[in-house]
Image (cartoon, rainbow, N blue to C red):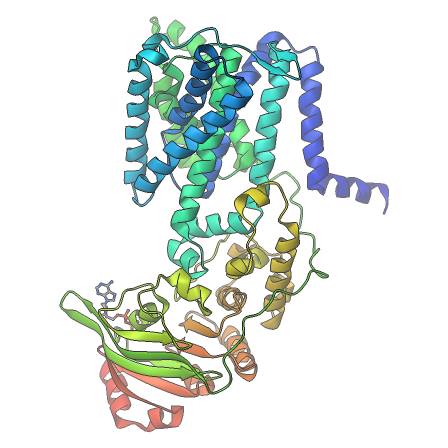
Length: 598
Ligand code: ADP
Ligand code: MG
């Protein structure tokens, strides 16, 4: 390795980057920076911690909360009350505060996270307001005057009373939180959260319990906020309700949007920019307007609208693209192979669909359909548009509930189970409209299929203790990509793929779950001739490997080419089923298709 290669190796090494950031922080603390700038950065650290939680919750998870300031309040008031009134050690109250935060976040989360659209932000506003009035009206908490004389933190007998010592503590916490978040995002749980944001349907089909993940990120964001509140109380030595109200909750949201909601380092950038902008406006605006007041809120509103319109990914999107992006190291080659489930023997009935029916109001979309699939068979499901194919598909995979009838998979009745439970039993699917995560690599997208084959949880991931399992998952993803001839594209961003490779990616992802039955929904839709040939190649190969497949497809040449058996539907009912030859020769089928063409 020559010097430039060595240098580039260092620049790209995540561990070296982190040590460098930490060292820079310490250097700043001991450098002769004026106390004013230390104090400013102390506040920025406290903000950053809250905003880091919002990066996970809003930027990555897509859930909007204006109630984070309330969780800061819980952390601050818990330690304020217990240290001043009960004489408890702040190190103990930290955990009491976190405990209280978890209980209240669980409560608020379980109620509100089932809500969709605008209900969640509204519910968090209600939560923020009620907690604010609670803090302001409780005698024990000093009403709107708050609690004074909160002691400074001590660590090994050393009092963290100066701005500089607090700086080191607060920024250490922020950096640890940022590193933990970066670790989490680059893990099995991180992929699940991203998948949930892009499509709940897809995430559940990959076995992700999306409600559980929503509650999980809500908890993590709340705990970050609570720790920020604990630090704040011991930094200011006093608390009162005003920094924990709705205005501050909105300001945190402003910071995350300004910085770049999807970026961990954007959180700190957003906090810095907001604090500086706020200070500057507080000096400037009274001069311009002539009276004092919180007019900066108006400017914030205008900036927010402009940022959302012209820079939707925030400031970090301008900076981030110039930073070196490390390619994923191929460190999985010697990882152990994941265990596989026992597969049905050739000829066993894998899927048995009995009289399944789906009514949407008066419309019978699927009318008492029967068919079965034996291990090693490729069964085609065809019919004109609106025949009920996709609905049948959704009934089998658990996306829709049955009106009546039953579905048996490998001898077990699975009707009524949620789709993630059906996935767990070995049924895996692709989507008619490709559902992937464009900003992740092909390999990471495919690894999403192996969700259920890993077990390491979010805490393990944050502490980076999940690497052994992660290597197994990556090895499996790489193996499946090579299996379908896409090994060369594994490090590309999924969003850069053409339609054909995108559909193959979905097949590799489904294979990654080690399925006993594969369901493909129109895999040839939108493919060019060459891409279609590649798909046929993959299907033939899977057939020769003994995979059982249910194939919904419009392309008749492809269906006739690869299937062993075909079920024809029309207006929700089964017109006939048989071998490709029988179906091609059937006058009924011809009439149905001719009817459609007229
Ligand atoms: P195909 O996939 O064969 O083109 P679908 O299964 O999508 O057909 O649709 C079958 C029928 O059910 C169509 O008439 C469609 O309009 C209707 N349908 C499908 N989904 C719904 C729904 N969620 N609500 C009401 N009607 C639906
Ligand atoms: Mg359809």
